[in-house]
Image (cartoon, rainbow, N blue to C red; front, side, top):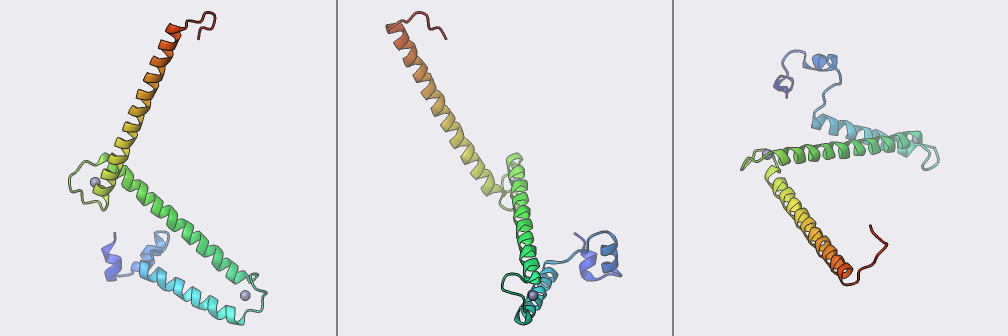
Length: 145
Ligand SMILES: [Zn+2]
Ligand SMILES: [Zn+2]
């Protein structure tokens, strides 16, 4: 987090752009999207292309789709990072948002899974026992497995 860029020290913009991608704040990005939408609306009112075939509208739709996908990926990554953290974290009252809740959720899921496994093992055991008893009461020769 760069505090200097927000307070406007020196040539912050140039430095940010020289370092690679320009860093937009959330507000700037929202404003840009709003402007693009306005431009598109203005274009749409004057556009003579048949409905659905305007390249500008198509580009916008594709762009929005891409943004949406990116947003989902980011969200997923955050969730994943949280999950990884929550799995390793055992701090009571951890400062990471959602850590406690997620940890409890994961513990509950783990417990459920363990209970399920135990039940299945129990079932398998009784099934084997039954089969062994049946084999003992009616021994069959020749079909060894
Ligand atoms: Zn058009
Ligand atoms: Zn934590």
